[in-house]
Length: 312
Image (cartoon, rainbow, N blue to C red):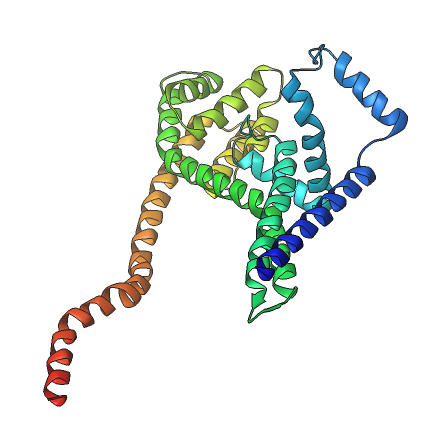
């Protein structure tokens, strides 16, 4: 009973310290005085801004969101924010995940997983009637660090998955673009044919480049921007080849035909490379999962019979 009361008291003390730290962070990172007043005026009276201040729930959650964003921004290095913005471009800039949402999720993960890790360490700190504070500190540290960088892991996974999808769809899209240009369509019309006639991440990127050109951006600049928004080497090569063909006056149909032929060879080489990696990937599951089960099934009955014979 005394141990339970001690745990409850330490948990309450831990939560009180956490609330105090959050309050200090909010007081040191938030805007005060005229700066906060000017920011509120800009937010309320900007074109398209919230005239009535939003619903009651939005107004109640807004200070918490600002707190989480402030925590994420203060604990994240500048290079980390640049890295997140670049990988958000690779992930297609999901509308539900702006950069501010990444910082907000970082603050939420830091606090929630930090508290969870501290509670786990609190449970592990009681042994043999004594209490050690080291597991609590280690749990808070590991949980806080994991929660702080978990959104980056999610963004990295989404970006890599989208880039792999673009790599898979690139040969077919390039063949379609080549056939459209050779059939007599202009390059912009051929890009529109690919953008609106196919689906997936690559169609979205081509459609974005087409919209940039329609808004007055030079074709070379739009292609360079397309190359900057991807990690697929083949797509970068195609974009740079189109830029060079545009600047040097080389017929684009000829360039696209050569690139399509090269892309087929690279697709076959990539498939062969993945096929050669399969035995290595299967080796460890085979050794640690399948072979022990086979040994138990094959050798187990003989071992049991031998033990039965020796124990008689």
